[in-house]
Length: 358
Image (cartoon, rainbow, N blue to C red; front, side):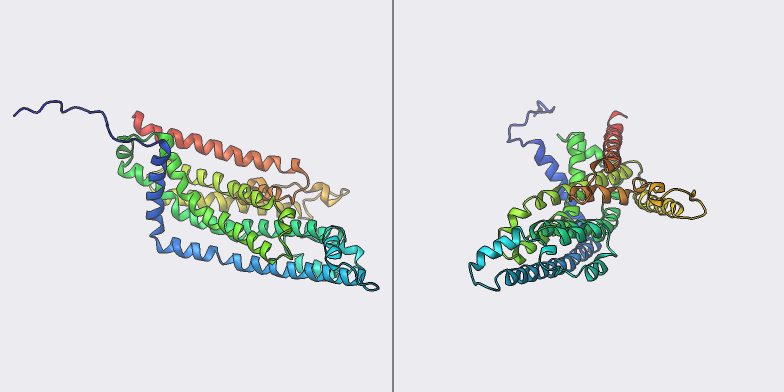
């Protein structure tokens, strides 16, 4: 018998929104990536720094609690009055230098001098109230957590995850299958972007929130939440500063070649060469043979961190956590990160469009 109407037919079933198509691409990519033994091992290793940052929170809270207790005992020596009132006053108003200088400045500087921005923490502990010192120290420890252990782990993890994501589709012409379905270019890119963003959130956002909750639990009371309520928002912004530019840059490298090993090499080269250039320029500035005489050294030093992507992200995160007092000093680094994100997104969109228009 004859076959009638063999052309396209209208879909009578239930249709879902664009978000479901992005989630389908992302969930498939996350599931495939999570099967890798190396990725699972790296996720495990990336959570190990949570332990030593948590230890730092523990010792700091014990230290501050001891200072408050000694301050209260000093105020309540002659007459035993309302202990809780004294404790609240000590937490809010009493400054360490008013408590007979019980904080040992020499030991404190020696313990923190090897870490970046330690001078901000020392000044806060020595001069500010316990609530302000707690906020500054928590932000400082979280900033260190983001920049060094998790920053290095981010470079390694993205170098394994992202290079094959688009280059493999270009090599196998899988984009023909994607775009033969009701999937747009933006949905495709957002789905691919969600894959590295999810894994980076597992090593930055989620561990940092865990550390914050741990710090609240170690504090003398839940009133500390009122002193540190903005830290979770700072964690989210610092995670976005790390995740968005780096993921877009890595996806751009993946879209520029059919060979994932070339994309991985370009990714590592950007970080390695940028950091090497920054170190070389910084060393040259301190070389006495190249420094002119007659000027203070501080006036002859220029911050060249923006040539290093590692330093650029670190500077922006330092400002997000409130450890950079001058916002104008961070503007060049924010401009660099925004430029990287915009250029990478533009190149990605053009590269994904090219096979369709060919």
